Length: 423
Image (tube, helix red, strand yellow):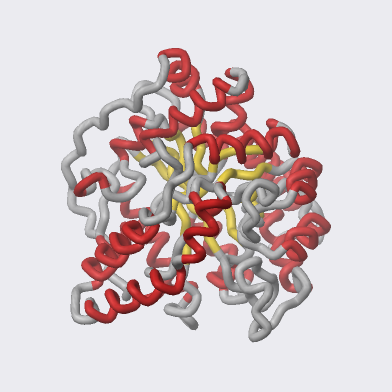
C-alpha cells in the first residue's frame, strides 16, 4: 500500500451510527455471459482492503455513493463485483502513532464494527470459515466482513493484545508492515543500517507465530523480509497466507515473493493472494513510479503543509487525491499484467495456492480496466481466456483461502486440545 500521505493524517472520530440511504445500483461490468455466470457462481474472497482508513479518517460510509467514483470499495460496487468476503485491514502508521499502536488499531476495529452495525442487511461479521459460507446463503447475500491486523507492531510486544485482537474479530495478522518490529524483520527496511535487525524471527517472534496457530489466526507473511519468511516456515504448524503479495520473478520488488518462496508456501499448504498495485505487477510502472518519488514526495509535503489548518477529513481527502494524480502521471499497465502474476503463481506453486488480495483503497494505481471491486468479473473473464476451468476459477477466486482458513481452524482445535498449550 502507498502510505506516504497517511503518516501526516490526524486522528478523526469514527462515524456515527446514523442510518444512510442505500446507493443506487452500479452498472454491471461488461463481460461475456459465460464469464459472468462463472463469476456469479463463485464465492469471491479478497484478503486485503484498506477501506477502514477512509471510514475513520473521512467518515466514509460503505453504503453511500462516493463522489466522482472515489475509492475502490463500497457496498454497491461490492454487489456488482459479487464480492463475497473481504478482510478489512487494521493498519497503524508506525511513526505517527508511536506508543499508541494498539489504541489506534482499536479505533480502526471500531470503525469496521460500526459499519457492520449500520448495515445489518448487507454486512455480517464473520469469525470463522463457516460464517463466510453462511453469509452468502439464502436470497439476501451479505458481505462477510473480516479483519486482518497489518503489522505486528500493533500488538506492542504483548501476546495478550494479540489475543484481544482475535477476540474482537481479527482473523489474520501480517507479522510486519514496512517497518521491522522488535521481533521480526520487514522487507521494507531490511537494507536500512539504522534499523536493528534480527536475521528473521526472534524467539519472541516464534512465540507469536505459535500463539497465532493456537488461536486459529492466519499467519500473514506479506511485507516480511525473506529471512523472516523462511523462519516462519520452520515454526508454523498451520498453512500461511500472503494476504497481498505478487511474484518477484515478474516484478522485482522486495514486497513480492520469489519462486522459492512460492514453492515453500505450496509445500506448507498455504496461499498467495495477488496484489493489484501497478508497481507490484509491472516493472515499467515500478521504475517510473520510483523515478518520480522525490518530486512526488516534495509536492505532497507542500500540500500537507498548506492544509495544516484544515479539518482532518479534508486533509485526508485532498492528500489522497494528490497521490492518485501523481500515480496517474505514470502509464497504467494492462489488465494482463495482473493476470500474468496469477498465472505465474498458479504454474509455480499450483492452482491450489493462489488467490486475490487487491489492496483496494490502499493503492493509488490499478491495471487498466480494474477501476474498483465492481470490475472483478474482468479477472474471471481474462483467466477463462487463458484456459482456466470453472473449478480452477472457484479455487482462485476464494476457494483456496477458504480451504486454508479451515485448516488453520483445524490446527487450532488440535493445539487447544493438547496438554501444555492452554491459556
